[in-house]
Image 1: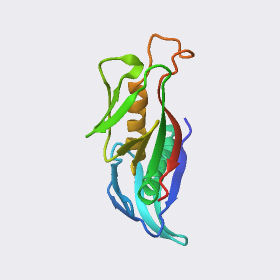
Image 2: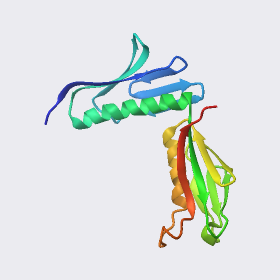
Image 3: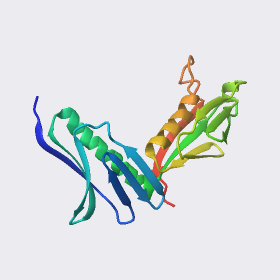
Image 4: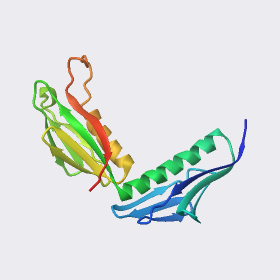
Length: 187
C-alpha cells in the first residue's frame, strides 16, 4: 500500500461569495442563498480558508493519504465547488413529459409532484420534492430549480422514477417523464 505524503485540492472563491469554515462544517453564502454541508465523516482530511495571490481559496488537504483518502479530498473539493456554483448561478433540470395514449396530468402540491392518468391508471403517482427546490410545470415540460445540486438532482430523479414502467417492453411503452437537460440558472 503506497501512501502519498501530501495531497491537496484548491477551490477558488469568487469575490461575491463568502465561505465560513467551522471545523469540518462549510457554509457558503452568495447572491442566490446559503448552503451548509458537514464533512465531519471525513477523518484525516483538513479543510481551511487561505488568502493566495489569486484571492481567497478553500484548501482541502490530507497527509500520508492512501487511495481512499486521496479520493475523499477530491470529492470534498468537488462538493465545495458545487456549493459555490449553486449560490452564484443555481441549477436547473428540465424533464420532458412523454405519452402516447393517455394524456398525463402533472401538478405540484406542496412538497409533492402528483402525476395523474399515467398509462390510464386511476391512482396518482407521487414524487417527493427535496429541500428548498422549486418545481413548475410548463405544457409538456417539468422544470426543477434550486441552489443545492443534490436536492435538485434527487427531486428530478424522484419524478423520473415515479413514472418508471415495469413489466412492459420499453421500446413500445415509452411513456414517462425523462430528464433531458441539466443547466445553470442564468437569470
